[in-house]
Image 1 (tube, one colour):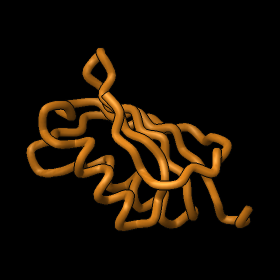
Image 2 (tube, one colour; image 1 turned 120 degrees about the horizontal axis):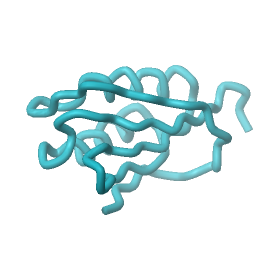
Image 3 (cartoon, helix red, strand yellow; image 1 turned 90 degrees about the vertical axis):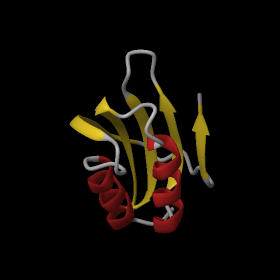
Image 4 (cartoon, helix red, strand yellow; image 1 turned 180 degrees about the vertical axis):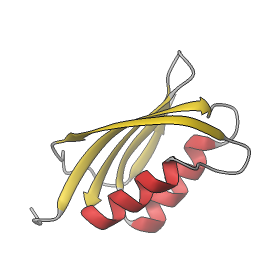
Length: 93
């Protein structure tokens, strides 16, 4: 496993559902070479699992704080995780 491989578990709050947030997140992740999964939560937040090279994960996490046009991100909380060696980036729910 590369030394710079990291994982982050992120929750995004605000107007983040119904604005294409998951689809744009997947596109950004794929462009950066980040693996993971994104899903809407029943409470209106978006949950994201990210893993990949440290710099790419950091770049995607910074993008999540802005989101796509139409979104309004009011808070982001994130914690470190253990990489699961995922391949690709998926959308659920």
